[in-house]
Every structure is written in structure tokens, then in C-alpha cells.
Image (cartoon, rainbow over all chains, first blue to last red):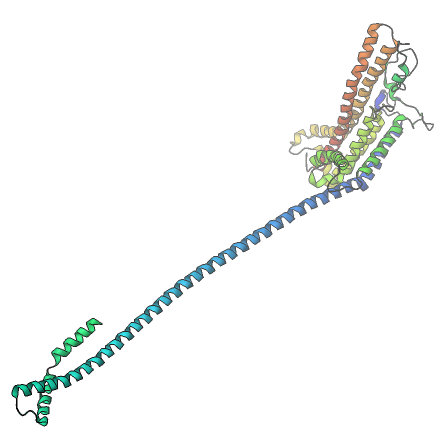
Length: 188
Length: 275
């Protein structure tokens, strides 16, 4: 159909209906695609994306929780260690205290025993001294009577003589006493 | 008549285009692309018309079926459907238009590809054996839509500045304006739509013509001509037509893809800040 001077041949549609139908059918397809098909697919993709992201979030939360638990356990472990160290320290301190107490007690005991012994010795000594004094008096009198052989029967006079003699003895006792005391203390 | 007694059923796929008179050889020509009526209605309700409607129905029904009961964890069938959908969504729309704009043009692009592809495959489908878009009117229809879409997209985004963007690439010295402006005008507003339509139409017309020559010519030589050489040549031609069919399958799919990609490309260049 020569519209212009040249014959366009197959470049010219045979019927106008071809152009109209080509466009019209495509418009119908477009409308259906826009109203139904593409939204359905896109919605599904959105859901899929959300599901994947949700899964990832869940995994992240789980990991966070695990980390928290781990930190908690670590803290507890550290606490336990400090506690143990403290207890050990306490025990050490207590042990030392007990030891010190015992030592003190022992010292006190030994002191007590020592003073007791000293007292006993003192008592015995004075007893011995008293006894000795009496005996020495008698012996001396007897001895002197035998030597002198005379009237030392006069008790009164003899007693006075002995007293005097003993007083003389006592005025210089330091030697005998000191030696006795020193040897007693060394023995203890 | 030939030696074999089966020529008629073998010639069935192509009798309408060959003129069909017994005896004489009719060279396939452009007349084989003209159809007048045939369905009892007006003259324009012809084979390509019915095919176009069928293709539209097929596209719509298949996509509606595909978009039913979509799950986040796909079944095997949904996986296949998603493959086709993503072929255009990710491979074309997202790739060319980017995240910001792809969603708006996605329905058109997916529909466009499906419609052209199904129509092109009809050129290889037994019983139909005619690519709808080898009738150029249908191609012009689609080109008109794409033309409107990419120009409207540009005006909607940039207003009147769109025409300045389209006619004047950035950074052209003013001395060159008288040269550049007509070239850009021709390129963007005349040549783009023309080539878009002609490419689709031309590929399918030529492809179908080649198929016709090999199939009808081969059948004629094999069954209706005399002489051994002719028959051997006819047999070889028929065998070779399988390769042609394979090529046409590729071309049909490729042209549908190219038309879709270029539509997206034109929209993208309209939306771009400057060329």
C-alpha cells in the first residue's frame, strides 16, 4: 500500500489493528503484572529477606546470651578464687595466732612451774636452815661442853652463849647463803 | 509424485505459507507473511491476530499461576518460576535501573519479555509456525508503548529539563551545539524507536523466511522433483533445517531479551541526571 511515493513493503503494517493489538495486549499484560504478579513475588522476596534477617538476629541474640553466660561464669570463678585465697589467708593467720597463743601459754606455764619450784625450794631451804640451826646449836653445845667439860649444864648460860654464837654466825652468812641460792637457780 | 507415499502429512506444518498449489514451486516471499481473515470475522482477525491474543492469554495465565501460593522456601516449580522472574528482575531491571527505580518498571519489563518471547516461540511451534512479530504492526505497537514510557519517565523525573538532557550531553562547547542537537534528537527520538521495532521485526521475518526456504524447498525437492541429485539436496536441506530451527530458537529468545534490555536502558537514560 503506497502511502508515500515509496513502497514501504513489509515495513508498513498490513492492518492498523496490528499496532493497536500489539499495544493493547501489552497494556493488559502490564496491568495484570502490576496488580498481581509482581506484588506477589516482591512480597515473597520481602518475607524471605525478613525471615533470613530474623534468623540472623536470633543467632546473634543466642551468641550474645552465651557470651553473657560465659562472662558470668568467669566472674563467679574469679569470686570463688578470691574467696579461696581469703580463706587460706585466714587459716594461715589463725594458725599463726594459735601458735603464738600456745607459745605464750607454754611460756606462762613454764614461768608458773618455775616460780612454784622456786617457792618450794625456798620453803625447803628455810626449813633446812631452821632445822640446821637447832641441830647445829645442840651439836655445838654438846661439842663445846665436851671440850670445855665444865658447867655448861647451866642451861641458861649455855643457851645465851649459843644464841650469841649464832648471831655471830648470822652476821656473816652471805657466803653460805649466796652459794646455796646460786646453785639452786642453776639446777632449775 | 514422489516415491514415498507420505508427502502430505510431512508438508503439513507449512502449507499455508507455500501457496499450496500442487506441482509448481512457489518461492517463499513476503506474501507468505500476509494473512486475510480466516476466522469468519473481519479481514484483520487473522492468524497473527489470534496468535497475539493467545500469547497474551498464555502469558497472563502462566504468570498468575506462577504467582499463586509463593513461599519463602520455594518448591521445585516455584524455583523455576522464580528463575524466569529473576532473569528479568535481577538480570535486567535491577541491573540497568538500579535499586531506586527498578520496582516501578518491573511489571512492564517482565510482561514485555514474556509477551515477545511467547510470540516468537510461536514461530517454531508446530501447528502455529508463525512468529507474530514478523508482522511489523505488532512490533510498532510495543515500540509505541516503550517510547511513551521512557519519555514520560524522563519528563516526570526532570520536567522540561529532560529534553535539554536528551539533546545536549553535558560539557559540549556551544560552538558544537548546532551539530550535536540534531544528532541527539535523531538518536534519542527517532532512531531509537525505529531500530527497536525494525530489529525485532527484521530478525523474525528473515528467520522465518529462511525456515520456509529450507523446509518447503527441501520438501519440494525431495518429494516432487525428478532426479537423484535434487532429492539428495532436498533431504540435506530438510536435515539442515533442524540447525536453522535451533538458530531461530536462539534468535527468538535473544530478540525478546534485547527488546527488554533496551527498553530498560532507554528508561534508565531518561532518568539519569545527564547523559
